[in-house]
Length: 290
Ligand code: PMM
Image 1 (cartoon, rainbow, N blue to C red):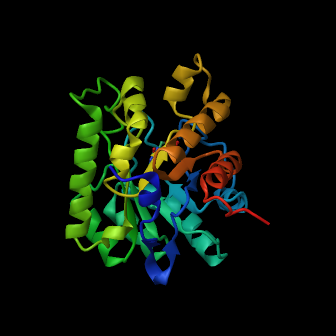
Image 2: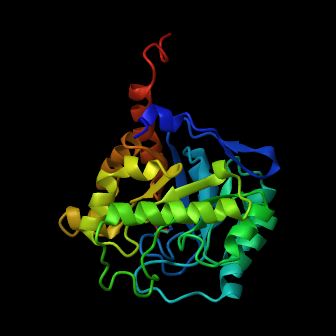
Image 3: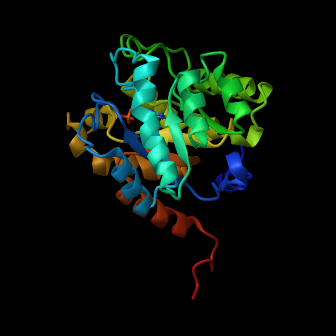
């Protein structure tokens, strides 16, 4: 198994326009949900463009714009509606020069294509390239992709998730979907993977995946999203999403120490601060002298 140092020595992620995302130390992806019904912040963000800018000012290295809620039980959003939610936000952010790459959180190739044409640099596909056209769309744009694992669909995924060996099954699926992206022409260095905590997983499944992040990070640069999720609520005695920050930071620090390259969160500033301290402690001796 590679060491964390070896994992961190991977090449930067190539992005369109010759840009690169350096993952030499763990970075934070800030969430901007443009949805009326997301479980964690639905309907409460009045101005997603201002919110995205604020998250970059707080230290987010990627801004993830999503127009479809994927909370358990959520119904699918029609493509036109999803486009109408995310495109104006992406266009405004690109026009204003955001200072961080934008990812579009979508399962739909049509939405991804439009978002990439508008200036997004990554596609965050929670279905893990389930639609056969998605990999080609990413390749055509020279973009990067986050391949996430989900068992079932948001409508059904929490009904009765079941695995024989959750870590092996998630790792195998991520490796297969990574290969699908590369076969379609995506740069191998531009494929990130994500175990999809909470997507067709019980609390025990999520904890097993967190315990074995190094195994998952062997597949590709690893994204982990635990922010405000119900597993935290469960571990914290039933706390609602707005009371899960400190627990989420515990998870973020754990993830960074066990191989995550990107931590996806709603709480950017506290997570950036926590990871800065982790990175400083983990840095070579002398790196912070003088
Ligand atoms: N979680 C949500 C949505 N998109 N994308 C990735 N790559 N990983 C995740 O864990 C993830 C995701 C859950 O909903 P939220 O946007 O309200 O946190």
